[in-house]
Image (tube, rainbow, N blue to C red; front, side, top):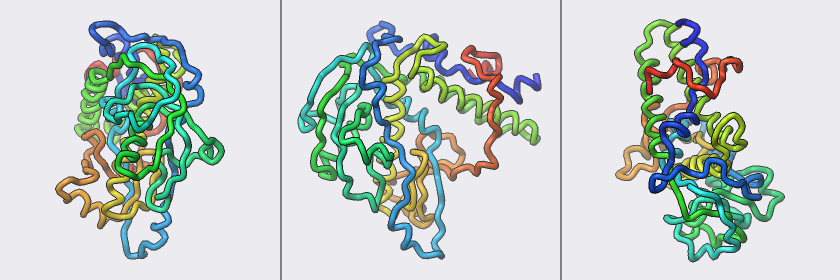
Length: 328
């Protein structure tokens, strides 16, 4: 029993999607291995490792704090829409006639643009070196939705969509997200209830195995190896939804106080005084949950030395073991 809890096999998140939480449409199973479009290999998902120029003016007496979002990918999983069938070629689209609330899942070729607020916040496309060379980039639907929202509010002057692969038939991962959330809460309960150092470490390792498992699910979708699912567009949609949601929250926070830094897509560094002010607003731009429970809320970033050790690669497996039956 000790070996099972201290060296757990990877949580089989993708197998739960394929067998227990199938994203159906009118009772029909999705196209698990849909044809891969040319855009899939070129898609650009925003990422950033950015520090604001305003941070240089912060007095030494001011305290800063780095936070990250609780279960950010799981939060994205519960809100994203994906294509149920294959993606079809649409060609050029007029962004002014696109409703950001009704963008079809898929890929869109958009023109790169000059971001006018790089001293305040990183571009919604991120700060990858690729953006310095590419005049156009393929993005997933959640990224286009964000750009259209910025266009509607006048922050962007224009959004040019030169090509598209999309699907009118869509589904979601709400049931999958619900099951993963139940498992996550159970594993966090086990961490909270553990009393000895060995028990705490074992519980944290099981939680780490869970995180490894749902992270691996998206990686397996990209290639379709060792699994039923080959849907790179699904993985890209979740990645892009995660990035867009994180960026929106940081953008709203920048109206309260300066952003000192943004890193690893889901981290922000701000002044503690601004954070206290922000969470007390009638409509706070961000919300706190130091317990780490509420998906999408912020908590203080965990120090690396406090994080569980990496899992033994030999323990990783696509097939569910008995290690997680108690939280499903």
